[in-house]
Image 1 (cartoon, rainbow, N blue to C red):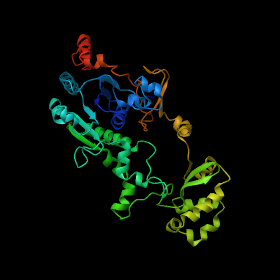
Image 2 (image 1 turned 180 degrees about the vertical axis):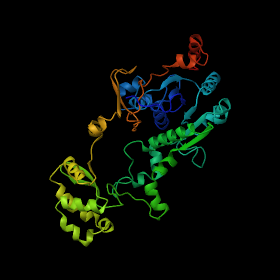
Image 3 (image 1 turned 180 degrees about the horizontal axis):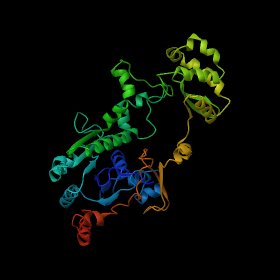
Image 4 (image 1 turned 135 degrees about the vertical axis):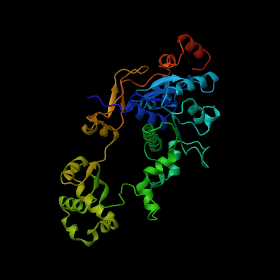
Length: 399
C-alpha cells in the first residue's frame, strides 16, 4: 500500500546543517514535500563528514548525512556571492517554506533575512532554528546539542544521585528542535493565509517536552531530581535486575501491584501496611525493590516480560539498539527503509523513516540521499539557467 502524501506539492528550501534542521526537513520530505537542500559549494552540509564510518566521511556521504537526507534534492549555492543571493531569491519565489539553522543574525548580515525573502514571496513560511531563539541575552551564543542539554536541566535529572548530571545518550535537543520545527511548519501550511516567520528555540523546545517534570516545580514547588531508573510517581515502577539483565516493570495501579505480588509469590506483602497504598510503596520503594529482585533472579527479562504482560502488568526487557531494531515489533512495521543503490556509496544503506503510519502505511521517499549538488541542472534549469550558465556559475564559485 502506498502511503498518502499530505504535503505533496509543497516545496521546501532546506538551508540547514548537521541535525536539528535536516531532521525537521526529513519529516517534511517523508510527508510528501519536495525538499531542496541548498548547500555550501565544495563541502556541503557538515554532516557529510560526520559518522562512524571514516570511508564514507571521506567521500562526503557520512552516516550522519545519510540518516536524514533521503528523498531530498541537492544544489550548491554561495550565499555570500551577489549572484548567489539572486539565485536564492529566484528559488524563494517558487517555494512554500525555507528552513535555516544558522546563528541568529547570519541571514540578515547576508541580506537574506526573512523580511528580504518574504518581500520576494509574501506567502513564504520562514523557519529559523537556533539554540536559544532569535532574541534574548544568549542570542549570540553558539549552541550544540550537549550545551542545550546542560542549560535546559535535562542533564541534571538524567542518571541517579551518584552519576548525575549525565548527557542523554543521543542528541535529544537537536531532535526535539527538529520535530518542533516540523510541527510548526506543518501547522503554518494549514493557515488560511500563508506566510509567517517561525522562531524555534531548541532550549525552549526541550523545556516544553519536560512538562511532566517541570510542572512538579511550577505547580507543586518540587524541583526535579535525578532518580535513575526509578519512576518517582509510583512503585514498584522502574528497572529491576533479573537473570542476565534488566526488566522494566510498571505496576502503577493497585490492581497491577496485586497481580505482580501474587505472581512473584509475595502475597504476604498485600497485607503489609508498608505497601498498602501507592504512597506507602513509594516511601518504601527500595526495600520493596530488594524483595522483588530476589524473586526475579531466576529468569531472563524477556520471560518475565511475557508472563507479566499476560497478567496485565506492563513490563519489557531492557534491550540494546540492535536488539530493538531486529525485533518483529519494529522490523515488521516499515520503520527501516533500505536503498540498494546510493550514489557515492559502495553498499546498500538502511535509514529510519518517521515513526508514524498514515492509513496503515509508513511514509516513504523514493530516492536515496543525494550526492552534493546532484540536482543543479533540474532545479536551476527551472529558474532559467541553462547548462552554459550553470557551468559558468561553477567556474565563478557561485555554485
